[in-house]
Image (cartoon, rainbow, N blue to C red; front, side, top):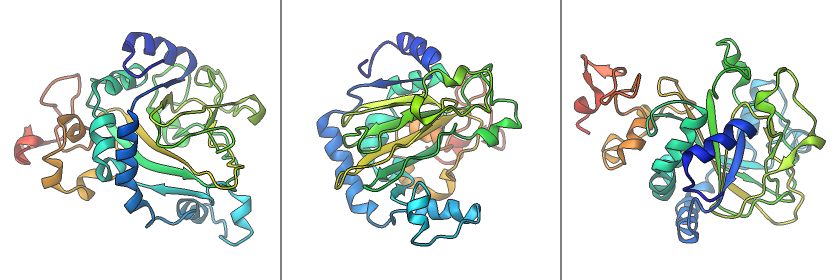
Length: 290
């Protein structure tokens, strides 16, 4: 379906399948502008560095041999895309329609969700398939949220800035797995389907859907996506936005982005200004002069 379709229609599909592709979220000109903003910055991030951090946590030893053994060693991550790309920030993340779609999986007033994470993910030739998983499972299990009976604690979007074909490592998913009774069942790779995207298309999905990046079996094609994750307004995210974003620059951002980065008081039940995350009982945005 095209980006801009009635949220009620989108919501029905998302609740049933757990994810769907929306075409034309960005125009070709906007895709080109986003890539032009990202290109000068992404070279500073080493291919495989994110996987190396994960390997350190799991006590894996990073050697030439592990480059072939562990997924992520041929993948490049660049965090803080919402700060690095005006096009992504204003022409995608701040879009009213996107907030309405996210709210169909993670209930909250559109435009007030926490931006849990905002990354460029490039899958380079030679990358192997990622292990199938649900995002944030262990984090939310103790809160009783990792089951089919609660709303999505995270809603994810994968926005294509390049072609994303099966051969290039398109994300593989198990549609409907967010409704499975047994959340210890991780499915089988042969049962997944590849989410192929054209530049400007976006895949929106529940974090409870089983998924994983595919293998890039091409010789010279890089798959570039922007991955954003949205959670409840009161939930802390991966990125410490108030400490890493420049306040003077944030003052130029759309209100929706200021909300997502927690530079404004947080809405509890849709109220504005928000009841939580205040300074001396006054809205944070007054203290920050937003």
